[in-house]
Image (cartoon, rainbow, N blue to C red; front, side, top):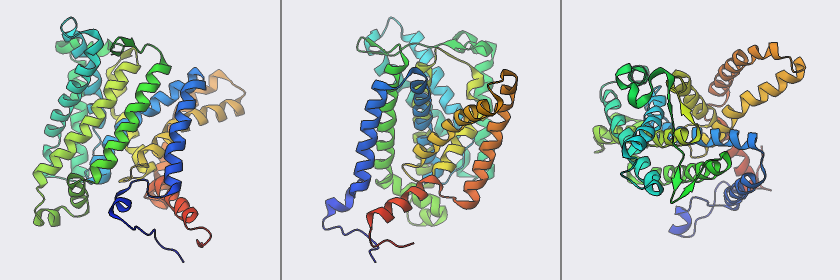
Length: 356
């Protein structure tokens, strides 16, 4: 029975897409996205944009939780910092930076600010871990939302009523439609996945994995827990800040309530369902988490005949469905949908010798 793939050179061993099935999947998805951007209707484009924004954030959570083993329930705060950072910087630098270059200036600045704040939020990870670290990051989420809502910062954040967001201007091309935004979000989401995949193949990524597996042993081997834990928090926060920037550009107005605990739980749920510590885990998790409420709406409308008064039950059903999904995957498949897909691909790659 075939139990592996022969690697005849170092180049073959280093390849990410090391078999025809992976290549077909990636290139096929690129072709599907290109066709989707051309032919999909406005509602489907709207859902796809939400998926793309959530995917960028979940990639960040995966770096911290999936690869480094540090639990966080406060990543919605980093998304908020990225979103409000882009909006505030756009207002401050208006007239100073040319409009066509504004996007290329304020997005990196907002991501850098989010990464720096992520370092400070990650300081408790040097002393605590597990549930205690999750509570510490959760407190950071509440603090950020509390500051955004204060009247003292209302001239910049808009306080409780929120603030209007700018439209991205790429060298004179203003992206003012959802279809144009989808192209930008899809490119950035794909680049984020590629960056995360290559990060884990570097010395830094291997240090993250060593800390996840056994932090004390990693320290004995010479891996600085201080350096790499804070680096993980910074990189994770940076990805979430980038997602927040896309969030601000996609929605015409942002509100503090959009970045509360529900968003943090949604990010963690997508990672658990998709598969922690795997490149494609965030992709599968986001697709399922975003599409599930839409499926519930369609099924519920079918059985109720489109009764508007029954729509109030869809929100509780969505929460119940989220809970059932988490329980199912934690008990039956802790490695998520990605593991199921890997088994299918391995069986296909070894056919006709695969058994079971």
